[in-house]
Image (tube, rainbow, N blue to C red; front, side, top):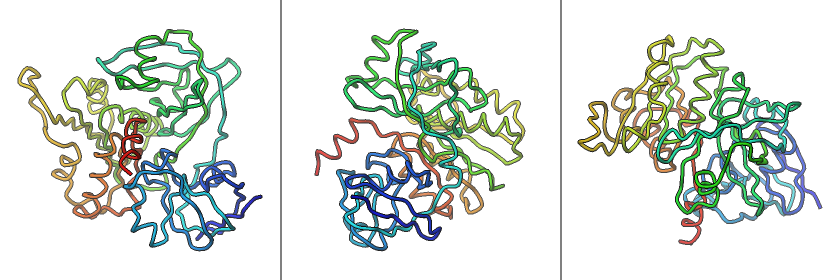
Length: 346
């Protein structure tokens, strides 16, 4: 059995198989619904159900509160239709531009850039190339059927290797393997490109780039792409960490600030210790943005990192700094432990 999904206001239509989520069907059909995590955690794919009925699979309460669901909102990554449906969603131009592939890849290099951060360089087969937009991610397909998502940390034109930044989560199935057992020349499999977190190039607005921890990875790719495309838009990067060592590519950001026109870099540390000798900005990284740019009404914001940072930034920027909600683009790094903990409280 299949159901028809109609997207308003565009009028685009696609079919959804019985038991398939609206988002999965849209991706398969090349229809650019906004999305991030695909597992009910980030809320990026939320829209309105105008007609028809759906059932939501397990998801995080903050992504779709009961009160919002009662008002007709739906989380399309978790919504399976029981009838033809009409939905309201803002389509993302260019989201389905490149084919989604399943590919083998060889680990080309492992570079431990911090105590808990590994830069993994991936080498594709000689006859393959992955086309993607800077900011998108891939999903590693593990042997037990589970998947782990990581953003490409290099712009597409720098495609000799794909690189991903992996933070060690002690006890984590995949990251324990990366830090303790993975070796160069190991073979992995992944699917991609995925996600709608990439630079909207039809705008000339100044850009605020906001990252915490390894949320820097897709932000780095976006900056590299912007530099390569010779954008004249103003860009400012705010990168936050608990300690200075968490800003594991601080020197690269300083180099951009010295050499790239219209680019500014603001590192922010939240838990500096006396031995760090830190003399720069301190506190929450999104608060630094608010201090410097109290009026964001004419900006675009691209935020990536821990869910608490992304959620706080969106709430505060829109409520207190006049940022239009439609100009806040985010990729929230939700771990398997985060999802499990949230679902366990239900």
